Image (tube, rainbow, N blue to C red; front, side):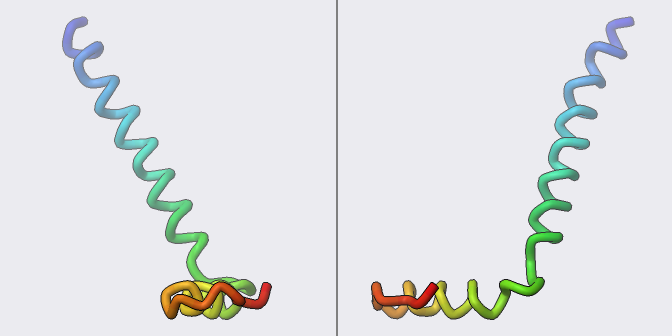
Length: 52
């Protein structure tokens, strides 16, 4: 049974990592993408007056 206790933590981490990657990919784009891009570009340009 030592092999079961040895394989469970890596499997749990792999499943959790998969869900994190899935959430990141799903949050890309969508209806708010243009607004988020404009806000990010305004911040990168150093302007603090980005419209919300």
